[in-house]
Length: 237
Image 1 (cartoon, rainbow, N blue to C red):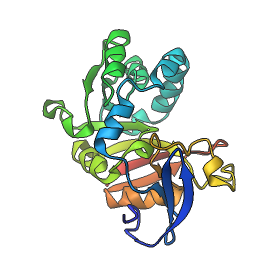
Image 2 (image 1 turned 90 degrees about the vertical axis):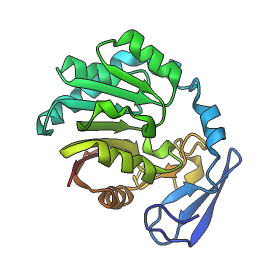
Image 3 (image 1 turned 120 degrees about the vertical axis):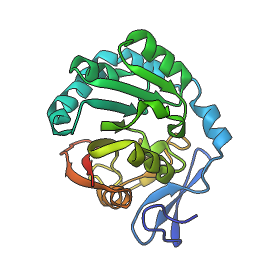
Image 4 (image 1 turned 120 degrees about the horizontal axis):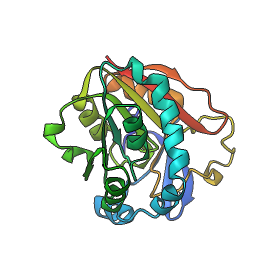
């Protein structure tokens, strides 16, 4: 399997965890699960996603966090159409609604979308993969995708859809675990975010910059984070 960042094919084994092999691209340092689990295996894993009940218990705090992020950047977007891709139970959609945005959310987990519709009915929701995003929803000015890209078996296909659904000069706010952070342990497999098949890819800031550039997004800033998490603001070129 070629590295999805630099397309290199020279990879060194990192080790195995939970029965999945993790490798490191020797050219750019990107780490990923190889081979990628099958689509059927991943679909079974994410139906009734086990983390969703925990998210529901923390909903108020997650809305507050999303509200801070959106308030900080929403004025930089070219319009008020917002979508959370991988919205889970809809907390970022709820925050966007509070700020007066036209808010949409999509998630592969039908149970999570049902919770979102029940708790935050002012938003528009869809259950399914990104490729099934309703055509009538059009394009978006602010795309929010938090803790999603590390889960994806094909991030390139995901971002092809995102770029097509991003309006001119649209903002992108992306978060993912930061595999290049100083707090990541030297024993990489012991890092709490190494948990296949839930997490399949492990990005550094340089990885994210190169990946987004390939899909037509330019990094505007990386937020400072004392935790081993990466928070990137980008704009569609």
